[in-house]
View 1 (cartoon, rainbow, N blue to C red):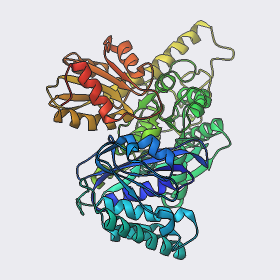
View 2: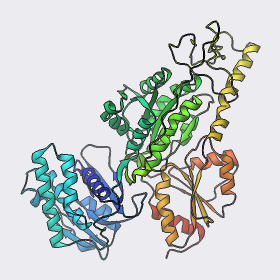
View 3: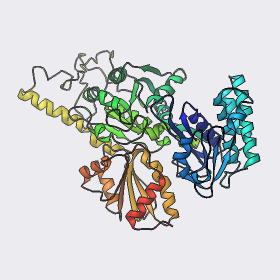
View 4: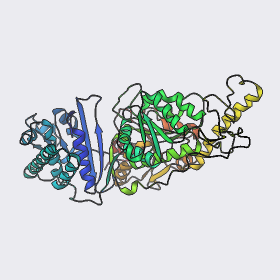
Length: 580
């Protein structure tokens, strides 16, 4: 479905995805848009299947074109047996503009819409009816979804119901259903959710009570969702004046004893890095969602990339323990965000959930079982017994794990300094007049060792990367984050081509489970590193930590997500196989 910004393309696409999930089909919705409110080419790619799907797939069966540019850009992706839907009142389409064996279906969407209202936007009601008919889905289900979303707008609802029925009947009379139409009913109804919604829901499930955020695409909808549900979940949502304020507010809330989070994209995270280091120095639990987009600088604000991993790993001055999680699906975004809070609390250190525009904003149809009820959040802080005399509490006591007893402000007898300077076990600063004195040189070394000791503990307490797909395999693909979604679809296509392949999904880029990765990759016949950046940033981390190198890579940095067939084509090239 394509048109210009302001044409309501995303609404049409998400409504169709909701129809599919309501009917029990798995769905995936991918949106492409520009950095303008009006104009510019936008599109939405909706895919449905009785089987689980992980990405937008390849090609299309129905192209609903609201303007000529949509035909020019997307008609080449139509598969044999597909159909191009357009309004002849707007423009014409010639047979040589579509691939062979593709049918052209002119539908007078504006003319049909004018029977019910004068607003041109109602053509989308007609279009939704047309697409539903072509996909073989009942009109009654579409009407039910429209009633849910527009039920409070009586006249608008009536117009859309009439317009969608007109489009549905027109398509039935002039075309029927596609050869590739879905059955009328799938399995049990599915949930339709974006990655950002899953992140927000996972945070709530983990006990989130405070979000401070400054809006930045593609992280903004996390704040939107939590603000809309703040009262139900008893969460304070604060839109800060900038990213510096946002992260400092979150650190302050966590220091005071509640689970807190901030969310941003790469440009915003760049502003947060000094405070990010302060959370590490004060050993304050902190969760940051960093939803990546194309850079550097403003880059492509509405396009996806995995270009921030090196920045996240090196953010802020000095060295300190941090955890980086890279969920590889909407369901993983839910689970990994919840895990981020527990890791932050358990190890009193910052945790970054590294998403990207593709995962954050696209929607996926999933089973309810993909979103399990999570265990109740563990105690948010340690309540140590006040020492005798009331003044011997060591907030930063050196322990075998590196984790010290944590109190919150106001606990009687447990006062401490929480400065951003280096300090001793009590919190007393050593940076002002004591640095360089031999005894305090040792204090500095001791406190650094204490903090960095957490990394080995975190590594031991977390799960190593997972290996998905065939075993044994001709080739092992390696990646992290949202790359897993199109890779999973590619594995199914490769199996159909007779190629046994598997995928090493590194859902925790840091601290890296180097030994587990070596064990998998040293037994692999061939490897292919797949990342959405120029330099293969995860590959560099693996090489630095293990010495393993990747002679074959598939790196994409044009702003568009991977498509499964791109991955299949590269695998065929690397393995010397031929497409069947």
